[in-house]
Length: 65
Image 1 (cartoon, rainbow, N blue to C red):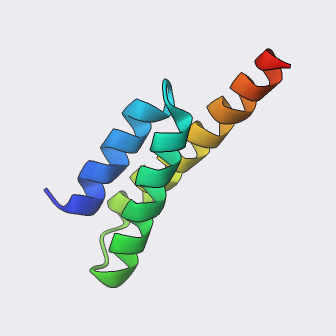
Image 2 (image 1 turned 90 degrees about the horizontal axis):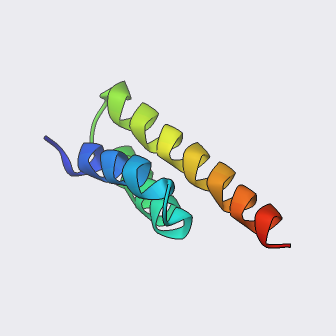
C-alpha cells in the first residue's frame, strides 16, 4: 500500500474528529500522488478526506458560534 493511500485513509478517519489534521494529511497525500503515479483511487481517497475534513471543520465552527 502506498503512502498516498495510507494518508487518504487516515485523513478520512481523522477528518471526523480532528478536521485540521485530516486536512493536512489529505493535502500531503495529494502532493505525494502528484509526484508519483497514476492510480486514481489514491486521489479519490485524498479528495474525499479533504472534503470531509472541511465540512466538519465548518460544522464545528458554526456550532461554536
